[in-house]
Amino acid sequence: MSVALFGGTFDPVHNGHLRIASELAELLPVNELRMMPCGFPPHRDDTEVSAHQRLEMLELGIGVNNSILSVEDIELQRPAPSYSIDTVTFMREKLGSSTPLFLCVGMDALATINTWRHWKELLSFCHIAVSSRPGFSAPKQGPLCEWIAQHESDNLNEIKKCPSGYIYFCDLTMLAISSTTIRDKIKQGSSIRYMTPEPVVNYIQQHRLYE
Ligand code: ATP
Image (cartoon, rainbow, N blue to C red; front, side):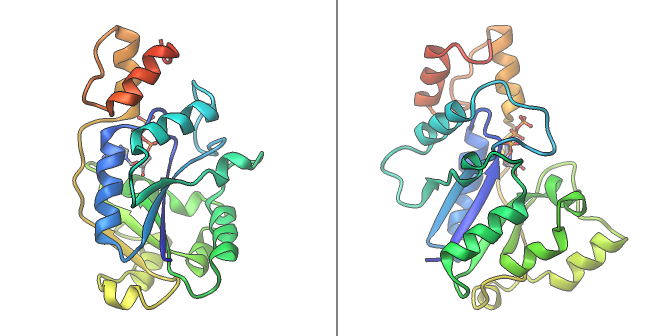
């Protein structure tokens, strides 16, 4: 069972996340894509709502009858900051040595991946699938650029034969939605309908989140 992990704060989950997750699940040679909320994000300030509420919204957003997308809560179970290297090490132990594992990151994240803990070791445990994000591009020079060049492949047939080790760039549909916009709209008293699935809108209203 090959797996893709799509991490994020999901504060709250929105249609941009869900659209990109569905496209990744179709594009990558995986059986399932797990959306993985981070616990205490090492690169961001603490979030406005509890981890449990972010998880519940994610479950509502994905819906119960989704055979491809699911939730992975391992980063919420750890008290320490969510370091990706710890996550993929743990996942590799669970999946065994031969199952392909993909860590999906946005181009914004790739551009600073060399600040992540033990970043060069990530590819020993997983592939990295990079989705484009307007305003961000891969570095054109320096150690990060060289590392990418060493590991990049556009051949999914080649990639799927290996459990880890490749960087793959995906061209996907970006919707002009962010969690920040949703939080701002709620603060302004504006509607967030159609920016995130209706059960998530209802949950936010019921719990008076982000007001
Ligand atoms: P915030 O506005 O709070 O920074 P965000 O909307 O960027 O949040 P995150 O939870 O930080 O959402 O993002 C998780 C992942 O989803 C990242 O890899 C990010 O690149 C991607 N992502 C976020 N918004 C979109 C979008 N509209 N379309 C596609 N991918 C997105």
